[in-house]
Length: 88
Image 1: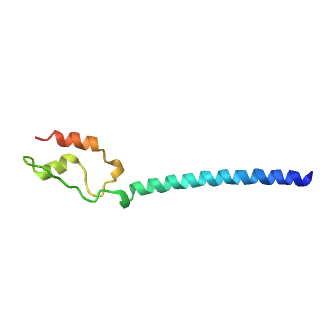
Image 2: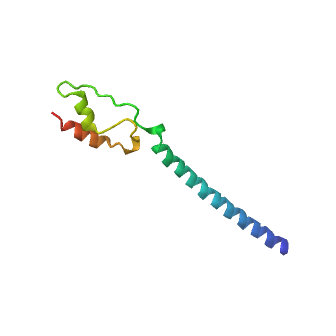
Image 3: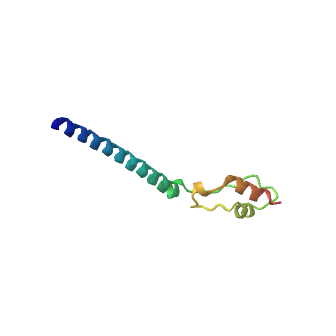
């Protein structure tokens, strides 16, 4: 009877350890993903402007509002397109 009780307690401890390990692993992955999106690994390295017949390239760059070093996650392509389309 005593050995069965010990086995049950050990099994419960192992299940608890597995759950804690899983939660810690998910948290670690979340922190790593957040750090990667804000790191220089995923930032804007260059901004290329093409097809500017009437509007100067610098005006398009200013209207776009994207600078090198900005996090790619924070760039809203729709907002950039709207700002650029407002130019003459």
